[in-house]
Image 1 (cartoon, rainbow, N blue to C red):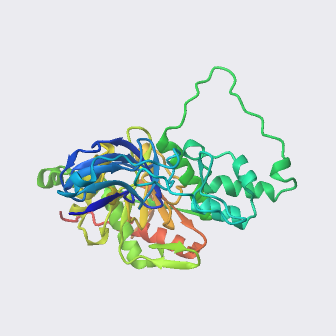
Image 2: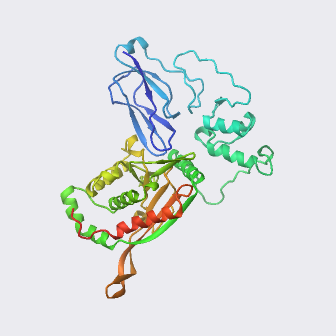
Image 3: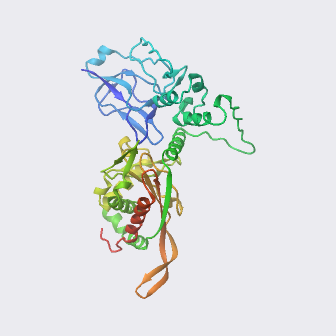
Length: 425
């Protein structure tokens, strides 16, 4: 007989908060183990949060549309026998900002801790400041008055890391930010339509800017002759469908080639934390998938190096289908160590993709097109029509130099060019 906190789950790499979309269960409702309690959303995925135990929902600690940090309690569930004693009680919150503010679990509101001189309080008025923002403010000697004047780009005007760093850069310029004239509002003219970014697009934009700020991007390109691969797929796709009930695309073959190249160059399969390089022993390949909304999500094939081509095909198709149907589980978009984004599926011949943090490299296969190419034969060089494609690799130049990035990319191309056209299923 106990009370169990329901915790906001971590929903993906670099995701530190989630929005509560809907409480499926209400205070006083009975809940079975693994039954959905609420629906949440991040920039990457919408998901359901199940109950870890059977019992009664006795406290709801946040409201719908509140943004909550991962790892924080969001509700309290009492197991049988405890619920009746606890009674249905809705938690009161000391502020209504919904951005991770401390939540009181009983009616009395605790006294706010005094703020030492020079420290930034967690909340000011209706505004919440994250620990990271407060740390930067203290380090850069930003006063509370200056902090309150920063226009926040986060949910409900919250000041983000990007906002405060931009303020610091402006403050270090020729004129202090407090003396700079306000930027004039830019109003669109002419025959236009104004479309507000949805929640997912706003967060994707923030993550993309953060990735470019974090990693100095370099992109390398190779052109690859994949005639053998194309001919093999055309030959086996019907048999493959009949035997395994799956449509084989080029993506699982790309994943297979990347896995083999990572084995040859394991220092591509890393991440960076401060001055430490974290080498990943598992090879978990993320595959960017387009959603009907136009946004992207990156489900992850875990331990891709342990799967056969048939296993990779099943994983690719399953994850892609459930991504489009918004049925991915939180753990299925976590733990990626390398990402593939197939720009060729949109008819693009090449791309310069942005790294999916905290990874250090991302591969973009381009469209496969018939082109005249020089073919070396025992009778001399000939010009023939071949199936050609570009591969591009963006990598983090802090830890991946041109030699490593270029060699890895060339090795992926070599494995695709060397594909056995007589390979059995």
